Amino acid sequence: MKRYKKPRKFYLLLLLITFVIIGGYTIYLHFSGNLEATDIWNLFALPLIFVGIYWGGDTLLQKISDKRFKVNYEDKFVELVNQKMRDSKKFLIEDFRKLQLNAKFQEGLKMGYQIYQNGENEVFTIAKLEKKFDSKSVEGLAMSFVIQEIKEKLNTKSE
Image 1 (cartoon, rainbow, N blue to C red):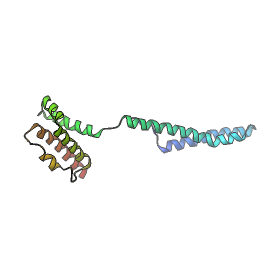
Image 2: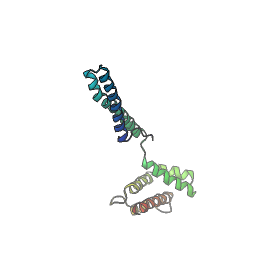
Image 3: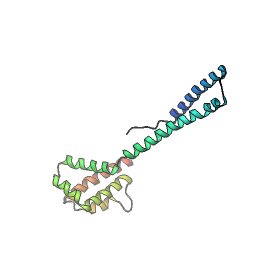
Image 4: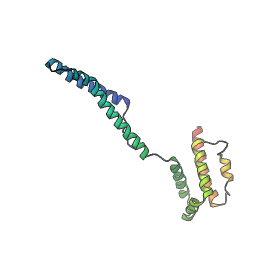
């Protein structure tokens, strides 16, 4: 994702540079005898307007970019578990399709993601997740990969 918005120092430096440039021009006009009251107004207003528009444009582009390329962490979690399941070579393509269509497994996967993201609480626990599926079924075997990933994440969080 591309960053459009720059640090505050950049905008402050840009403001300072535009003040110096327009200030230099105003001083030149003063010594040449062509200075008018509107030129003094321009010295203060133009740098603020220029930098304000520049900052506003960067902010708008950043918000659009953030909305457009929003990271879906649940999808990343599911992809991580899927990759580990594929690497284990314990599942057939039909098993993946069956798991994808199984509402109970998908609900367990969402529960697993909540634990993965926020840790255990009274509603979402690893023990409930383990009890939900028979360990000999395809769903139970797949859920063991989900639980393994959750435990790994919780262990790294606690360290």
